Image (tube, rainbow, N blue to C red; front, side, top):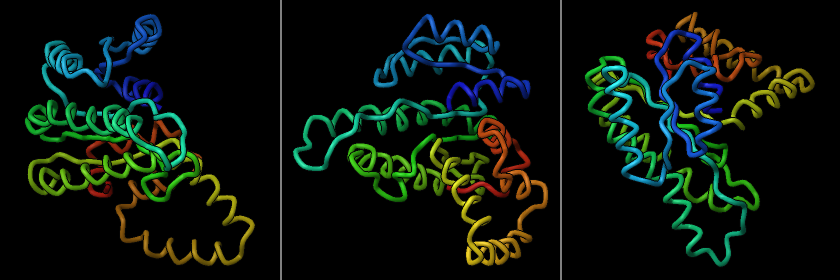
Length: 230
C-alpha cells in the first residue's frame, strides 16, 4: 500500500520521500518512482528525525504525511505481555512521533494532509489478531483527537485513515448489493443522501473499482478537503 501511494503521488507530480529498512529494495523502488530514499526503522526516534530533516532539506517542506508500517504477528488475547509493548512500539508510537515532527511543516504548508494506513480491526476485532485489535484503534483514536485540535477549521491540516482491507470490504459490499434486493434498497437510500456531498468528490470516492492508490492520491488533493473525515 505504501509503495502504491508513493507511485500514485509521484505520477501526480509530487516530490516523494520513501522510508524503509531494506536498503536494496528501497533504493531500487525510489529510483524507479523518482523519489528520495531514506533508510531507517520506524521504531527509531533518530531515524524518524533524520527522515524529516532530509525531506525538508531536499524539498523545502512537507505537505503530506502517509503513516504506513508493517503489522504485528497474529496471536490470541490470553497471555499478552511483552508482545503488546512491542506492538505499541511498532504501530502507535511511530505514528505519534513522526506526525509530531511533521506538524510544524504541515501547518506552514497551508494544505497539509495526514493519512494513517490502518485496518478494519479499528472497527471490529479480527480473530487471532489481538495485537492489531488492541493497538490500531488507539492510533485512530489519537488521530481523531489530533484532528479536532489541528484540523482544517483551525490551520488547514486534514487527517484521513485507510487500509488495504477497507478496499476489500468495499468490493464485498458491491457484490452484496448486486445479489441482495434489501442491500440494493439500502444503496438507493444512501445514494439520495450522497447528493449533499460535492459532486466531483463524492463520485470519485464512491467508485468501487477505483485503484486504491488513486483514491489516496485524490484524497490528498485540495479539492477533497471538504469531504474527508476520520
